[in-house]
Image (cartoon, rainbow, N blue to C red):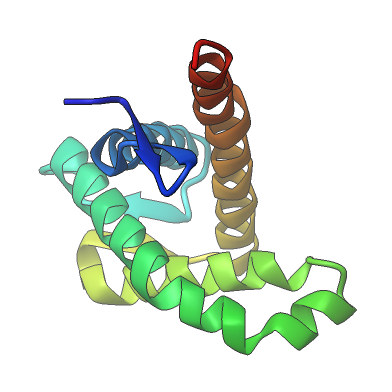
Length: 142
């Protein structure tokens, strides 16, 4: 399996590897947040399994529904200089909360907003510390 794929004269990371990076980053974030705040609840009986399932569902929502929401809210995001993007992340979290019902609950909207900010930071770090340096390294040796 190739880590970097050349796609129409553009290099990109393998989708499976990229998804695994985000799943690991999000899972670590959720574990940290549930230990910091009492208002974030993940079913104790199967804590790690539900954490991973939550992240997988959140990743699927981010790949399917989020691009549609981002496209529809471009004017609002532009007027707010990108701040509204955090509310889209917040909506994705609340949608995940709704899907999992009693097994995953974000009870405090401020903590949910903090989680959305944390996930945005994780996205930024994965993109700029892992993915872009790998692509630059491959471009260097082409």
